[in-house]
Amino acid sequence: MKKTIIIALASISLIQCAKKEDPFLIQKDKIGVLQKEYTIKQIDSVFANDSIVKHVAGDEFTGNSTDIKVYAKGGAHLLSLSPSESLDNNAKINIVTIHDARYKTDKDVSLTSTFNDFKTHYEVLKIDRILNNINIEFKNQDFYITIAIDQLPSAYKFDYTRTIDVASIPDNAKIKSMRLDWF
Image (cartoon, rainbow, N blue to C red; front, side, top):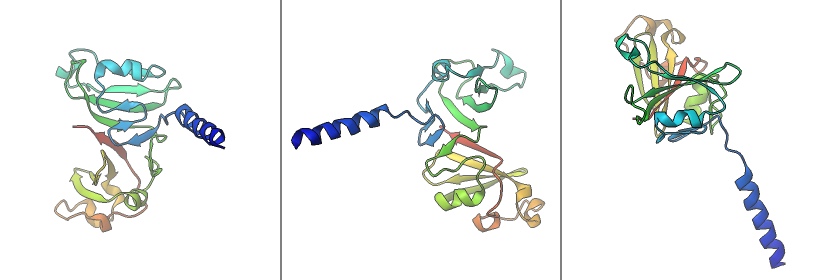
């Protein structure tokens, strides 16, 4: 009997170890295989099966982006990574912009989710109006979402002094973008 239990426990342990990590799961300090502590010089090995587009040294002075863009081999834009320092391979990643809807949280919310999906699973911490968008941060989460102001009732579109709260945002509001801040 003891041997059977030991074999069963060992088998379960091996099965758990053999499970592959979800390459599209958004977690605290991690998105898929990318972890918060990784540096720019590690990006090539982290995304070895994908295509990486890095900026050319000196472009930051011309106003061009210093973001590193990650594309799947098929061409789908997966992520944009913003380093903490330009031209420094030892720099960490400060901002991850998600472009592919396959990236989801453990609550199964993604770019294709609505505001209701997010507020159902996460507590809204802060709402900021930034020009024609609103950024919504969530308590104890690295990510925030952006919703275009045109998703809100018309009273909020042109009145920049009007306070926007959770009740002001329609449940069916579409997500414009999703980012992770790793400052």
